[in-house]
Amino acid sequence: MGWKMEGDFSKHTVKKCVVIAVPHTSWHDFYIGLLIRKIDGVRIHFVGKKELFKWPLGWYLKKVGGISIDRTPGQNKVEAIAKEFEKREELRITIAPEGTRKKVSEWKTGFYYIAKAANVPIIMVAFNFGKKKVTISKPFYPTENIEEDFKFMYSFFKAVKGKVPENSFEPDL
Image 1 (tube, rainbow, N blue to C red):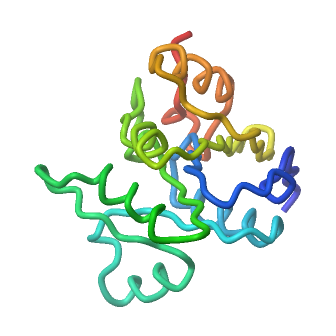
Image 2: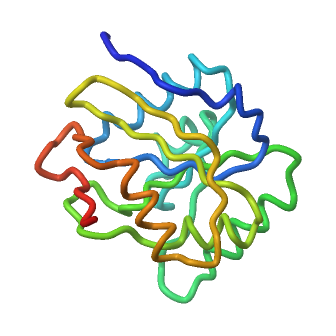
């Protein structure tokens, strides 16, 4: 398909982490993510809203590592997902911090607090459709300074264009 990959999961041998994939502008991000996992040979799960896990698509999403979450208000999603890390010897879980495929000006913070609660690193993955390039970061451990941490993570995705360029995340640095 003409894509290039920079970085990889396997050389870091991180058994537990939160993976953030940005920008999330199209359903095409899903199969690109599945291809990356296959190429790298690393099992990576992903979370999605529970509505996606209904028949007939639900069985497939579970088979390829999907974990459904209830996004209705009042749920402690951060704690629930952090507990999944305690239960398993190995868990890499992908979350789209934009929370939607539409244009957003800032990320949701759940992934960050999940990583902190589970004491696991964040690995950033940029899907740059403009350059047909996937870039995978080294593990990043969140600090006590969320503003600086977000500036650092936002800088990783600067000038990255999604499949739908007008919906790409453009960090305000």
